[in-house]
Structure formats: structure tokens, C-alpha cells
Length: 204
Ligand code: B12
Image (cartoon, rainbow, N blue to C red):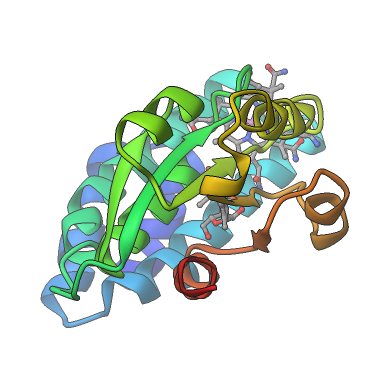
């Protein structure tokens, strides 16, 4: 089997050792890190989500798959984050309260680092104030945690900091309409669009 097919299979069956080995093999062949992520890791996780939805997989299987994805990302992240670009701004990024899904957020963070942003994790209002952030990036993967995005934006308003930062949102259930409705400044549907959006927002 081709290494990229092995990688997808390793994620679906939740074999982190095979995922790490297939990632190394693909890199050694010269496959670009971002191609591995968008072309192979993400479709594999979509398949895991589909299997969960049709009740072939349950939480333990999803956990094994996420461990395999993380093993692959551990190898890819430094490569995604090392573009050597000029500092473009300061970002605070996190997954909203109640939501454990951090794979997509970590990927967006790695891409932002690669795009020259200085990225600080979580604790939105405090960290944004302490680090004089230009941009706050919120991630949510559950329909039940999406509401915390609005709560977080409201917390910035209450702290008198809303005008000082731009806020961008993303995650599988988030749409442009939702971003507009909660008063976010921007929405991105992938780690790649996150960097372009971040640049646009800090330049505005
Ligand atoms: C892995 C996984 C888990 C793992 C998470 C491990 C981890 N540390 O992250 C575990 C097992 C813990 C888990 C738990 C649960 N999960 Co889950 N999970 C998934 C799964 C299969 C993959 C998610 C993932 O990593 N995708 C890959 C990443 C790279 O993609 P992404 O997160 O979408 O991020 C990309 C974009 O959205 C965007 N993006 C993301 N954030 C941001 C932020 C900004 C600012 C921007 C610009 C862009 C952006 O860029 C990213 C990269 O391109 C999804 C299915 C799916 N297809 O999404 C279900 C899924 C999200 N889970 C689901 C559910 C129901 C649950 C549970 C409630 C299950 C349960 N009964 O307990 C729990 C909830 C736990 C909690 N409180 O959070 C549902 C959600 C349904 C819904 N509409 O709410 C899904 C959709 C599965 C399904 N089809 O039913 N899960």
C-alpha cells in the first residue's frame, strides 16, 4: 500500500505508530507537509466522523484516531510553522469552553505561526490583554459549544477590549452567517484560509 493510503488507514483504525511511520515515509519521498494534512489527514478524520455518525464508531475509536492524527501532526507541525516569515501580528487562539476538540485549532495555530504570527494559547480576555494581542481566534467543533463564541466576544466587550482586537472564528459547524450574527470580524473554514484572513484583519 502507498504511504499516504497507509496514513489514512492508520488514522481510521487509530494506529498512531503506523501513522507516524507513514508520515515520515511520505515526507522522505518529498510530499509537502500541507498536502499531507489537507489531502490525507483531514479526509481521514471526516471518515472517522462519518463512522461515528452512523454508529459504527464510538468515543473510544474517535480517541484512538485523534491520537493517530496527533502523532502525525507532531511530526508535521514544526514543518508547517517554519516559514521564516516576518512577524505579522500577535494572536491569541483557543477552543471555546466545553469543547475538547483541539486538533483543528492546533493546525490553525501551526499555520499562523508559519505565516509569521506570534501565537499564544487560550484564556482569551486575560491573555489578549497581557500580550497586547492584535487578533483573537476562536475554535468550536460542537453545535452545543458554539454559543461560547458569542459569550467570549461579549466578555471582550464587558472588559472594554472589543475595539482593541479583531476576532476571527472557525470550526466545522461555524458559518459566515453565524460569524456575522455573533459580531465576529471574520470566519475561516480551513487552516490555509486562516492565515490570509488573519493578515487581512490585522492590516484593516
Ligand atoms: C476527533 C474527534 C473527537 C475527539 C477530539 C480529540 C481532540 N483532542 O481534538 C474526541 C474523541 C475527544 C471527541 C469527542 C466528542 N465528539 Co468529536 N469528533 C472528532 C472528529 C472525528 C474529528 C475532528 C477533527 O479533529 N477534525 C480534523 C480537523 C483538522 O478539522 P477541524 O477541527 O474541522 O478544523 C479545521 C477547520 O474547521 C478550521 N478551523 C477550526 N478551528 C478554527 C478556528 C479559526 C479561527 C479558523 C479561522 C478556522 C478553524 O481549520 C481547521 C483545519 O483546516 C469529528 C468529525 C469531523 N469530521 O469533524 C467529531 C465531531 C466533531 N464530534 C462530535 C461529537 C458529537 C463528540 C462528542 C459529543 C461525542 C460524545 N458523545 O461524547 C464528544 C464531545 C467532547 C467535547 N466536550 O468536546 C460530532 C459533533 C456534532 C455536532 N454537530 O455538535 C462530530 C462532528 C462527529 C459527528 N459526525 O457526529 N471527538
